[in-house]
Amino acid sequence: MASPAALRWPERMLGAAVILAALGAVEAAVRLHLVNPALIPAPSTVAGRVLQIVTSGELYAPLGITLYLLFTAYFAASAMAVAAGLLMGRFRPLYNLLEPLTEVLRPLPKAALLPPLILFLGLGDAMKLAVVGLGVFFPVLVNTVQGVRGVDPVLVDTGRTFRCGRRALLLGIVLPAALPLALAGMRVALGLGLILVVIAEMLAGTGGLGYLIIDMQRSFRVRDMYAWIVILAVLGYALNAVFLMVEQRLIHWALARPD
Amino acid sequence: MAAYLELENIGKSFGAGSAAETRALADVTLDVAEGEFLAVVGPSGCGKSTLLQIVAALIAPSSGEVRLAGARVTSPPERMVYLFQQYSKSLFPWRTVLDNVAFALEHRKGMTRRAARGRSRRFLEMVGLGDFAERYPWQLSGGMQQRVAIARALAAEPRVLLMDEPFSSVDALTRLELHGLLLDLWEESRFTAVLVTHDVDEAVFLADRVAVLSPRPSRVLRILPTGLPRPRENLATREDPRFLQLRHDLLSMLLERAHG
Image (cartoon, each protein chain N blue to C red):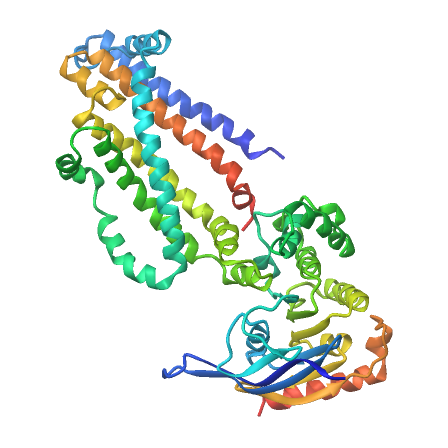
């Protein structure tokens, strides 16, 4: 019997072929002067510029700034959201108290908070960390609460019959049982966080990837602009891939379970 | 023999005060001697599980009290373990089989994780799962999962083992096998056992006495001593005329009650 991975290979190859074909079409259009090269440079020249950015080391400072902002806000907000979600999910009065507030704040696109945050926090890192953190917090919170409330009461009673304490019950039973859903929230939040950090940098950046993209556009360096966009796309892809690997390690039991 | 575990006038209502109030238990009084094996049978939905959860202090009774060795039970007592019907929901899917058993010991004072695992291995071997220590519960069959749950319960070295229809969702042959295993383990360590079941055969085969509950709101209708010789044998005991008589009496009592 063929394994699922073996079956998926031809499809993945086809998927890659579609990307190459699209790039080839753009390349041809540029070379045949069907599009204005000032607006869309040939993919081959953009690729050359990407390679140059990577090999010259030009990449690392802006990448470092963006990742610093993203990771600091992401991990802090995720940790706070999981902790808050555990408490809200376990303690009914707290849930009743905070759920309406959550429901009002959650659907608000967090980018809309950039102007007021700039008023309060200025144009520096604090403002960017705040907007990314807010964007990350809610999806993780909502998923964690849902995960905690979905924990089977039999698991909790099992903990009680073996007399494990409240702490062990929360961290040793409720947290792992809710982890698959919490992590699903964290995956969505990672994508959102990247979007928000780029927007914040475009608005008030001094050196991250988002700043460079807008800065290149303003200086009519279109090829550079596309090169940084490509780098951002690769970054988004890589972050997701790493996340999936970590998730596989943490909750392999939930992913492998037949039910 | 003096009563070790006492249930005195236990009553339980759900949704008290509302229109949908249901009285699960009317007034249940039962005494269990130390080392005794008591079975509680009753029609479906008569509140057997509720009664057992009250004994384990997993839920509070609306009236009455539970005493263990003379002391009132208000929170899950030490060395009293509840074996759940839904073994697949009661095992931790993120822990290996061995670590699931070790859970029973980890919360003891002065117990390290390492020591807990070391002691757990012996209990896993007792239920014949020594080779499956590093597997995950969901990789095992239903009968094997229930063995893991039994090993975990025994690892806590219970003085009282409360069993809530623990064999109701395994196949018939596995059930007989687990009956034998449970009795062997009970003979060995002589904990006090309370088994709730709707399976009359199982009750008679395993227990010293069988208590019959009425439909809800439940009370104790009768208590029958089985008086069958031990060790019980899967074939000989089940063919014993006394076994058949008890089975007949209990079934007719339950059927009569169930249909008015």
